[in-house]
Image 1 (cartoon, rainbow, N blue to C red):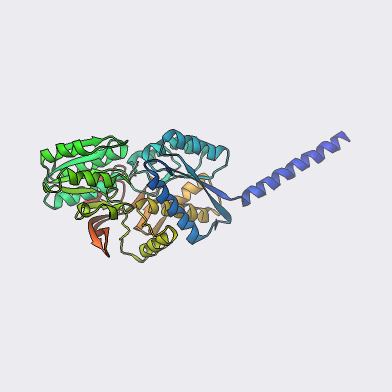
Image 2: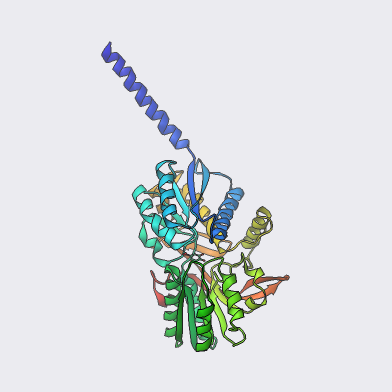
Length: 394
Ligand code: DHB
């Protein structure tokens, strides 16, 4: 009798396990999107989320036989919060994918969680070269600062600038940008005569700009993160660098589409290099911009939105390839994927898990009564030069 009961109980347990497994197989794929939705970098969070949501709106919420569920969490741009939220997402909510990461320190803090939990981590915004080396589970859909900086350094050297200064935000992507600019510019025969690194928090560019104006370079190379470009432009104007004939050259973060139109005439003529412009001339981008504006009260997508959009594309395409399997298989399926993004043709380098993309040289111009980054040249299929080869582009 006892033995019989045990057998029934064991069978029930087994049946329960089988049912659980089946339910799990049909369970939704949870994508935990951790972003700064409040604080000084909230525009990054807003843009990445809107890009990810647009992708889902256009492609449905079922792929590889599984439903996709987006869980958006606000880290306020604070690394300890990002890490804590990511941990909770994987442990308590069973998230299958971590995504977002609006700033480098936020991505760096979360990398060990992705490794320990063996969960794919899609970096949709942060852009320091070394991020992808912090976990084998990281795949990046944004860009790297050295990709953008090499484009503008090359343009400067080829367009009569022999002496330049650099001004960057004083944290990892700023140092990546300044180092890359200097390396390429000096190899092409130019000299960097002044270098400034400005605190990331509550920056005041004025004293640094004054020092640079006094040094009198022909060009000033700038990187500041998305959202900060307006203040930089205002102080560049106020300190008279424009009047002194110092040409503003920058990564596209400075003339970010989210804020560019409000910058005014001082921005006109700025030359920047980057992977995305809302004015990129392709049918895919026109459709993307129109749909984004429609869904977001007529506001323009910037490069952060494209990072979110393409990051979801990675998740969808990989889930199709694995038939709904997540974990390590999903990362494997992302390696080598290539597609036509609103930014142009892109792929995921299977060795580094970083994005390979065209880098465009653009000029701020008025188009249809608004300021845009108008692309006029491009370097095709640029790999992150720090992890690949600096000479690949020349
Ligand atoms: C990073 C943040 C940005 O807003 C940006 O435009 C580029 C890089 C970063 O912290 O990695």
